Amino acid sequence: MFNVTVIDGKQLLKYIIVVVAILLIVILLKQTKKQEDVKQAIETTTQQIYSQSFLGCMDTSISSMRYLNSSEGTPKHSLVSGILNSELGLNNRIVAKNNLDVVIDTPLDIDDKSELINSEIPENIVTQVVEENNLKASYTDSYKNVAIKNKSGYELTEEMLVPDVSLENKKDIVIFHTHTCESYTPTENFNYEMTGNYRTTDINYSVARVGTELKGLLENRGYNVMHNTTLHDYPSYSGSYGNSMQTVNNILKDNNAQMLIDLHRDAVGNGSDYGPTVKINDETVAQLMIVIGTDAGGLEHPNWRENLKFAIKLQAKANEMYPGLFRPINLSTARYNQNLSKGAIIIEVGATGNTMEQSLGSMKYLASVIDEVMKEM
Image (tube, rainbow, N blue to C red; front, side, top):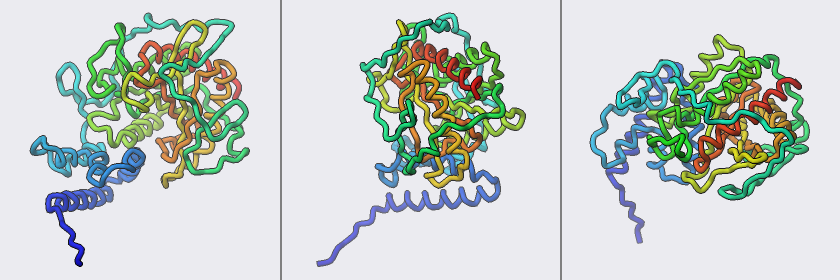
C-alpha cells in the first residue's frame, strides 16, 4: 500500500503568495522601520485565529488575502499596496462620510447630545447588577474587593496585586479608541445605519461618542483631557492597534499624560442578547470592564505590572462607591499598547446589546471614580 497525497494547485498557489507577501513585508520593514506596527497588528489578530484554517488566518491577518480568497473578482489594488494599507498604515486612511471619500488627518467632530443624558449622581446610592442579558461573572484571582480573570498564564502573587502605584501627572488624561467604529443597539434617540455588524463610521453613534461624554465630565472636574476620535479600525480592522499606537505616540510628543484610556465596547457576542447592565438607584447603565495586557505574548512590556496595580486601584474605588459597576478585571496575554505608560488601561463600556443611553449613563460614575482615585494618589 502506498499513501498518495493530492496537492491542490490553487491552494498551493495561495500559500506561495502568502509567503511572498510576508517576505515583502520584511523587506519593507527594514526600509520603513515600522516593526512595532506589524508586531502590534500580529498581536491583535493572533487571539482571534487559533481555531481557523491557514487560509482563514491569512484572511484575518492580511486584508488583501480576502480579495484573493473570495469570489468577488479581481482585487482593486495590488497585493503589496493592500498589505501596506492594512498593516503598516503608510497610506492615508479613508473614511466614508456623507457618501464621499474623505482623507482623515485629524479626529472627526461629534455632535453635542449631552442634553439627552442626566449627569447628576444621586445620593444614597443603591446598586444591583441586572441578570437579564448578562453573563455570570467569573474570576480566578482576587485582591480584597477586586476580582481578576487571569488569562495571562502568569501566577499572580500578593506583591503583584498590591495597588502601590501613583501617577506623577494627575491632571492630564488621554482618551482614544483603537476600535473607534464599535457601536451599540440603536434606539430612538441614537438610531443609525450600521457600517458593519454593530459598527459605524459615524462617530456620533459609536463608542467615540461615549468618549466625548467622559471627556466633558472629567473636564468639569478640572482635568485636561485630550480625546482623539481617529478611525483606527477603518477601512481595515486588522492593524488597529498599530494605528492607535502611532496616534498616541504623536499625542505624547506634546503631552506628558500618564493616564491613557483606550475606550472600547465589549466585542463578546454580536447581537442584542448580551448587554451587561447595573441598576444604580433608578437608572440602568452599562457595566464596565478593565482589560490589562502583559508581555506573555512575547512583546516587550515593562509596564504591565504597574498597569495592573493601577487597574486594581481604580476598581477597588469603584467597588467601594458603586458596587457592580465593573465586571472582573481581564488580564490578557496581549499588550494592547499599554507599554506606553504605567497608567494605560482599556475600559470596555457595555456590549452590543447595550444602548448608547446606558453607555453614556455609566460615564458619570466612571468620571467620579477616576476623580477620587486621582485625588487619593
